[in-house]
Length: 303
Image (cartoon, rainbow, N blue to C red):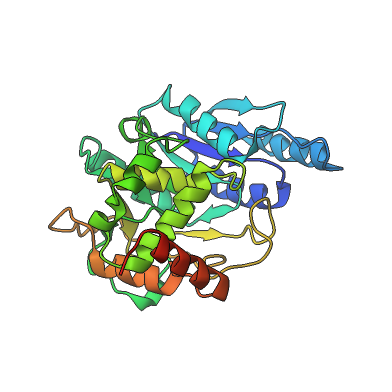
């Protein structure tokens, strides 16, 4: 496989080993490995990080391995964003996997073919391996387009990543202009995204990188490719950013026939898919979130 693979690891040798074994089957010719450093206050974490990094020494195929191992703990936001900056300073496109995202073998061919097809199409900003709706929504072609990003196994190009804004520095201006309301007609979506981006903008509340990528794609009118079938299983139920399984975890992955691709006729977001994804998976269900949304509604004087 000629497309570079990026492997993001930290302190979980058990899940890292499972993802590594699938990468070994794919045998990429170039493997970038990004690792964060241990947290000194976490007893035994330095040893786990060392064990995790040692798994990379098992590369036994013809492969250029390039590592970016931090000696200090940078946290999720800084480590992944800086790591991907480092990757795309060297290559034009890449397939990206974190240490708990186990791909189906067909995931790699899916990414390679669509990276090539949409290489110069700036409407497309990423290729996701995730379909969280499973059998709840039928995609007639091999893939469709969404405004929502899903990064549990994905691929992108340097041309797209260069627009990434980890600090979402224009958010306050966009919020004041009620720009989200021009993109989404449903109040609930606007409320939810406003709450998410407010928390991301306040660095002390949420240490993550992926909502900023969603923000970047959204405000650059970029689309995410979604496969007909789910191609990646997230097994990280207990980890750095999860304490229990959600409805997104442990979804089965499937083989996607990339020898008989059916491309969509139009490059436009699939609004039916997006609406169902929000309704079934993203819309808050608990009382606290409902109250927060009602307060936001009052704050922004939305009828």
